[in-house]
Amino acid sequence: MRLTILILLAFTLMPLSQVPDTAATPEATSLLGVKLFPQVDEKGEIKAAEEKLAASPKNIELLIALGRAQANSWHYRDAIATYTRGMEKWPKDARLYRHRGHRYITLREFDKAVKDLQRANELSPKDYDILYHLGLALYLKGEFSSAEITYRDCYEAALALKSDDSIVAVTDWFYMALRRQGKQATADGLLVRITPQMGVKENKSYYERLLFYKGLKQESDLVNMEKATDLEIATIGYGVGNWHFYNDDPARAEEYFRRIVSGKYWPAFGFIAAEVELAKLAPKRISAIQTRSAISR
Image (tube, rainbow, N blue to C red):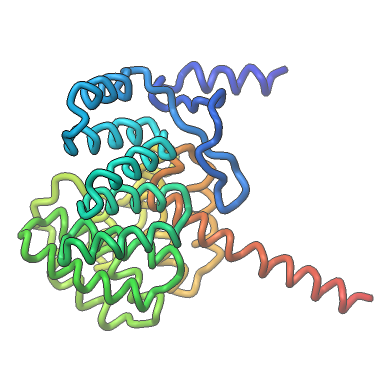
């Protein structure tokens, strides 16, 4: 009874936009076997976007806006269906493949994501957003060498944009892809451009991580794990946990990864990446248990 009251209280105190629509069909199942639900679209964004598109069905901008509205409340299957419908009318618009590829990443369908994002890259080479998401999909598949190549192109695209936010975002994932391959010197070379004077407005969590990698911030400076939002924990926590992993402290890394997946912000890239890491651990532990059992017989 007490547990039920606590659960109800938690949902009562949670902002409506954060309440999962558990009456709906799950959007996906996590890599750890947990059902992932959409949110309630309490603002009616989806209906409004549908009405605008119905009034002007040949407007690709309105179709993309509908897909975004669906994604805003985590209705990713519907967003994928929207972009797929758009491809029937506009088969060579790279944006549709990029958006659908992004949503496949969210649903943990990495092979489909890579296929869409590679097609988007064919249609629109050197596009920062396409390369960024393609690099991420490859990284999550554990194809770090391919991710490195993609992120190198993405990094050049970010420099051309002259956007500190873009530079920071790609540098963080590029750095991690390199470190996962043991290329610390190359990874550290990326940090030369990262300075406390950068004008970062949106990607502050990535920026904080990079300053930490560079030694300009302490781990305790980054996030208060007791007070931070689930999104902040996922974004900051994955980078810090990953840093512990390739600095020979896998136990500390696992603590971060488990803290991340105990939260509710399952679409976050850091959340998905933490799932990937924990999913890798499970077979190893089962094998270790079986080995110990065999030895004891």
